[in-house]
Amino acid sequence: MEKQPKSPSSFPQATSWIFIRGMVRAAAHWGDYPQQFEQSVPGAIVSCLEIPGNGKLIDKNSPLTVGAMTDALRQMYRTRTPDDILGLPTFIVGMSLGGMIVLDYLSRYPDDLCGAVTINTSAGNVNPVYRRLNPFALLSFARIGMTRNPRQRERKILELTAQSEPRRAAALDNWSELAVSAPVNLTNSLRQLVAAARFRLPENLPRKPLLMLNSAADRIAHPSCSRRIAERWHADLKTNPYAGHDLPIDDPEWITEAIQEWRRSRKL
Image 1: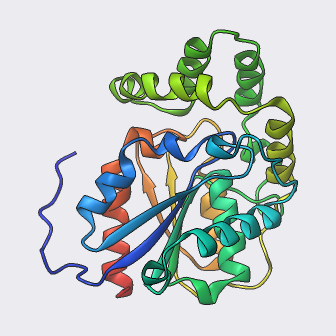
Image 2 (image 1 turned 135 degrees about the horizontal axis):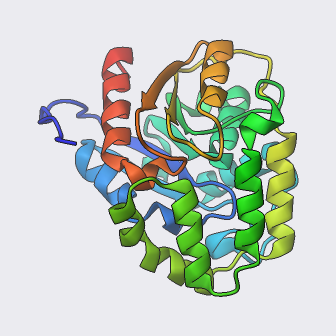
């Protein structure tokens, strides 16, 4: 996809961006996208946070609720971020389980944020279980879990979650290395699954702008999941026409362009 030229005066004010990945995925699974985002969005400073039990926090127990995950990540951000960044206008971006954390964060701590973005997420009181997790995908993940070779296992995960073969191939080395250096244990995997299954969309409408991104070819969470939440919460929605569940792998440039367009339209 050809990128549109960006005006040098587009977003001159410095902004802080919190990035949160999904279930059993480390912050490092973003790859070089945070750096790409900072280069494309003037003034953006990205902080990638780990869900306890993942990545650099594999020695921690994963919380059993999305709310507890939110509180852990919020505390992490507030205690580890320099004061000059904490004082900046702040946005939060989360994918899948990370998107559930974003929805909870936006509902309970709106004064922390200027806006929020979710990627291919869902909620139990809005989306039926067979839409939140495709039964075929559930069976596939069960088979993947029995694959002992880390590289083969990560290749199968990428084949299920991303559509672009070249971009899957480009991510495989990094993901294989993470599978060896920071493996998520079975207990934490199940705890995160329980937290996601129990998540319910809060009843109160958000007081800050929300952009929901989804993928038309998502084989994990049906694209209607984001659409129905957007309808319930009167959020903005934008659909990538060909990407899979792992939109940051398939089309990271599109995510950045969608966020920039949204900020312009909302004057954020």
